[in-house]
Length: 419
Ligand SMILES: Cc1cc2nc3c(=O)[nH]c(=O)nc-3n(C[C@H](O)[C@H](O)[C@H](O)COP(=O)(O)O)c2cc1C
Image (cartoon, rainbow, N blue to C red; front, side, top):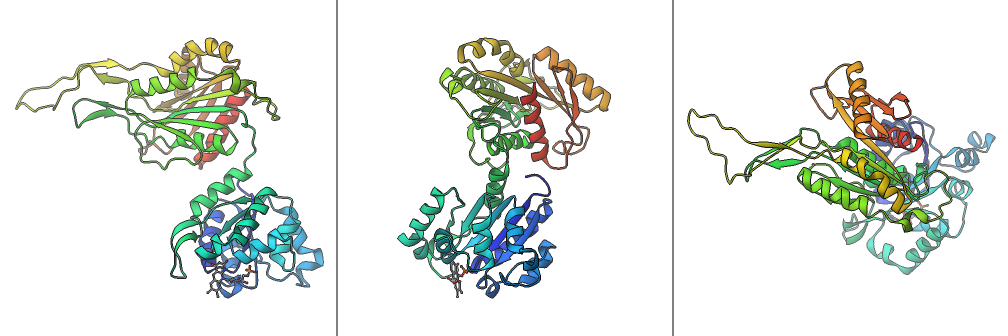
């Protein structure tokens, strides 16, 4: 989500209203502008003062407030919203939305806005399962309202079942999805991420210390932008990105095999779909962001043993260069699938800016990629991409450093669409 995105958060009369306080903090921490609108029932559960302090903005509670309505405040809010989020949404509020009511500030803002609306319900399981609620939700979904379904678990009312407000992570993922431009609709994005592990015996392996976070961020950002995303990942601790097909592999050879299977399966059917979005039709973007171990052991021993005073050597062979191999096969796949393929490589350097750029350019040419992402691994923590540059085969060079990996990922994807 772009920093400064204006989120109008509608809080309604659910026991889960206190959770919206933490949600506001997280959104504000991420640089979002959050304007809170509360129903009268919501005020029974959490005070407008709390919401005002956390959001640093005036909270709207009254449709007939002389001050805010001097400039027709509720319409101003509805117009300036990039997205309206109702969280938690009570059964009653969902019913009022379905009926098109506007009898308080919250429902009037929701009815008046042209921004996308996301609803995160929270209620007792029987209220949730009641056909009245389900029919209201169906009507709203048919009108293009997005829902973040409640979760299963212990409910405040003592019941067990579906009705708990979705977690903040899920709600923020929905916000990101809904606010992202959908310029990748019709595209297939294939990402290789994470380290590989090459066994030397049954317990030990040669691997890389990177976590794979940048590759995961690219997969996530591509999904938000509307792509079908396949993620081929080495072993990581990272949370599986929502909406992405994940293929777990361990070694470089397994990663290469999966990447080629995906590459070979690009079909002309996929490419020939007539998407209304200009530019992305039939495009396949491949991001080779994995930190593939350069070598693997020739023989995997049962157990490496220590013999006192003796040195031990392990015979290694180089692993394949997956990006280079993909680029050699690119034109064949492009002509058989009628798909436009863009290849993006990643190059980590411990040197200074000049060295990093020289290395990225050299790899770009040698491996036949369209874009090379050069990032500095000079920091102690290899996951803190201190500085990131993009170089492309048309000679462009751009710095893409940002504190947030999601923003870097967006810039990387955009650069691949430009070449
Ligand atoms: C203690 C308590 C907890 C409640 N929790 C919920 C809830 O989680 N979800 C819900 O839909 N209604 C809940 N209600 C009922 C709503 O507050 C009630 O329907 C109210 O009219 C909703 O108003 P609003 O939709 O304008 O915010 C609760 C009521 C009480 C007294």
